Image (tube, rainbow, N blue to C red; front, side, top):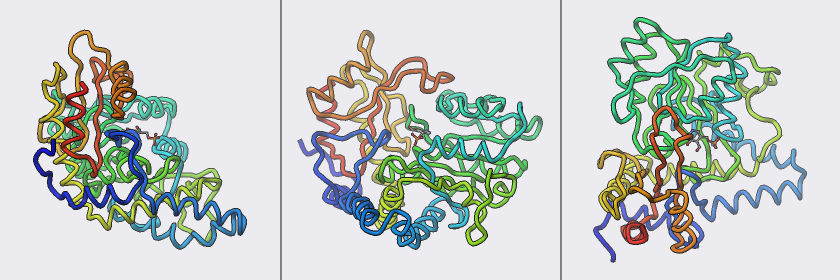
Length: 374
Ligand SMILES: Cc1ncc(COP(=O)(O)O)c(C=O)c1O
């Protein structure tokens, strides 16, 4: 069944034709998206260059491209090229930031109760005290409550996960950024699920993310973006060489450079597609998924219908196991989704969910096929 057209069908068609045909129905970009032919070729080309020229010489020839990438990535988060470094993952970005920040033991960090558990674990491992931000029933920051907290008992920093791994709702990051700025409290934004998905130019002091999800770049590459005021508080183990911006001290030296090259190409493809149009189509896909899936075989959608994301999570009917369902969808129907247990966000989740996260190429037919398979 073809179903109704979704907004910007041209984007869906061009995204689909730009990459290898999926083996089944890939509805799992919140886990890891599908790279384009050009990205795959750029990665392979750089690896080949390493074999021909030597890894360090090849890296030097790629430096102009990487610098353009830092600049365009900076643009996506409202920062400059000098504020952007490449790391290996979103987690690596957070660990690198915290290590260089060296905040005193017990310094207080306010996070959502639904914080991504590995982030909360890293904050605690850095000796920080993790405290909950006030939220509404859906887990969205309660701005009045946050303003009160910042006015009466400000934490050392606020760490906000823009879109959770376990829920397709967007936090009011721009509003949080202005509240934090007014209070003089730095805002660190986890944009692992939001970069290239919703607007990330929100005024945060630190933004970190990953390549493989909504940007559809290679695995094993991440990004850390830090505004100069926070960068000035960081003490890297070794300073950067004189001829590069100081933040570059945080960029990992030994790295999957071919992957970074691929990420830069993926960022270019995202910008060429038009970030605003991408956002509109992803939001329309999320809405369509929720409309199609709500109530199907007793599964219940967690997000409001119009949450502006492509991510939908489903609570199972009584007696249905999410892990088994995810495996059945994959092996019997070729549909790729994620089973998420409550341990991923234990401060908020009360049970497991099935996450459905289509990228631009998904069709109404894919969503109907998932509903039928459920
Ligand atoms: C919200 C969120 N933050 C951080 C991460 C960690 O990203 P990475 O695996 O690149 O370290 C993820 C990954 O799923 C995520 O969903």
